[in-house]
Length: 431
Ligand SMILES: Nc1nc2c(c(=O)[nH]1)N[C@H]1C(S)=C(S)[C@@H](COP(=O)(O)O)O[C@H]1N2
Ligand SMILES: [Mo]
Image (tube, rainbow, N blue to C red; front, side, top):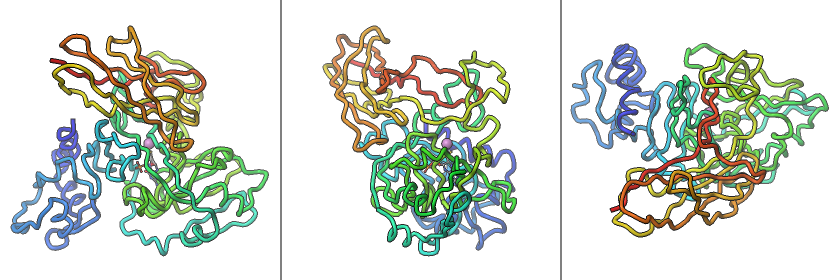
């Protein structure tokens, strides 16, 4: 999976426009002011990036893609992610690397719509809260910590397009397979507390989120993405303005130094590099709120069906889903039993059961399912599975939520490839 996909982004860039590729990778000009965009860095960081100094760096020819950059681990502080695209940078985590109950920062996926801010200074970061409020405010991170309860919670964030790679006919956009989902521990203040302090006006119905990343076009003032949520979701106790991820400052690609975490809803609601929360008297209409962005048809449609724009509705809570994080597909065992484990989550709901099948859905095996660490955290599950004869098996996982809704066998197709919560299947060979 990994290497190939990683190569595509960078190699495509070089194939299509090598000058532009050099400029993006190294910056304008040549040595000594080559600056990389992947890590927002210069030659020294290029060295860090490939894991060593580059003694013959002066000899790197123009239009030459350093091989190390086409490998998986091109994002500093990330480990084993598969890069899907490099401008904007998008990277997902293979399922077996999501095995931890709480996702380590190094394994948290990256989904960027624009160009992240280059240098961030947490001490000089300002968040403005304005719009339909009685007391507009501008707060630093120290103000947030001083004025409001600081809370920590494990929170599931999944990109609305996770699973898009499996749509047929295909859907345009990042071809996420399984790994645009994570459950890190986030520390911050409740958005609800901050909004209460700002005094929510009766006319407020929706939030609008603004971040400090810039549009790919480079156009001044043009936002790459600005989404929002209804006030009720903004007031949920687990909707956080976070300044720490797994007890440390947030990773630069996950929104440092300040981001929203709106668990259970499409990841796009969780604005990174957060600078402004604006309360609106109507449904927010920022970039990627309108048209067909993060929207699905209001009815079941046939694969490939044309759908009128007016029939699309905004995605709110994400549907029930699960992931098998051990074993990985391709695993071989001599025989006997195998521990199978993973996670399950269900938007704003709880997961009631996770069942496995090794006979293509004829019979199902109950797993041991943990309670979530807190509401909106994914739930860990495990089962010991015995395989009766040698041969090829598929393990299927199916989660069922607290309303009795289970994962489907096949994708409910939609034009933009959102919400693919069909069952995860892992192949193992016995004997
Ligand atoms: N400012 C900003 N916030 C953003 C985005 C972005 O491009 N810019 N991408 C969104 C999307 S689509 C997702 S799925 C999540 C992903 O969060 P992560 O990159 O920390 O995994 O961030 C969201 N917040
Ligand atoms: Mo997303």
